[in-house]
Image 1 (tube, one colour):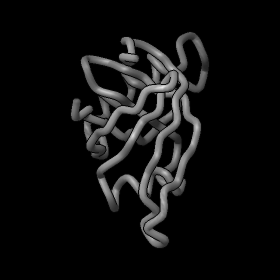
Image 2 (tube, one colour; image 1 turned 90 degrees about the horizontal axis):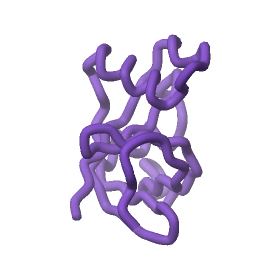
Image 3 (spheres, rainbow, N blue to C red; image 1 turned 90 degrees about the vertical axis):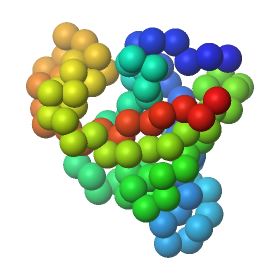
Length: 106
């Protein structure tokens, strides 16, 4: 199933930067302009560090599997836009966040 524009819940699978094993985490993501974004307020989570070390990731969404390549978003305007889309009307949309941008391979 195609991931539609907007907010969704999915499972991000990364490769452990130390163990080399699959690491899965359920996250709220955003699809915006044909890219997938996952964000958090600090870059200290395993999934974030893993995706930086090994950029090949998998997203599971409604029983479908999507392969992609992740990179850190360095554009602060884009980071703010993603936060606003991810947390519409919520105060935390204004927090500084770090984001991963995933380009799907299919």
